[in-house]
Image (cartoon, rainbow, N blue to C red; front, side, top):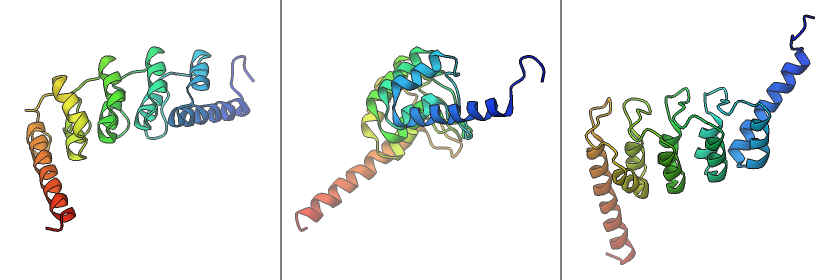
Length: 177
């Protein structure tokens, strides 16, 4: 064996540590994960689908873990294999505090998350009105069009209209009308 060569056993152990780190990010076990990063684990480590530690922490609602990864230099706009950014994932899930954190740390508010879909479009389509409002206040481009030809503004208006119809339907249903 040459000096500096990695053994099979060492490679296996490193793969186990990577899997552990990805799981820690998902579960929001911040202290152990940050300790691993402090001792050399790449802060932008990704799983087999390209989901970074930050993406996993953000998507799973782990605010403190996301904050600490960003403090350690995690790439706020690192995309997974589907082209999605952490902000896109958070917009889909509807987590306002995480969206605010990512935006404070420089996330691209109008990032194409695949097929021209932006975070505000995700938020609108999935009824995340608080995220829509936040992204609008922060300057999300409403004129941007997806590859389907829909503008973010159209998606937001359509979603509000559908929401109003749902509320009307539910109020009539609950009042016996």
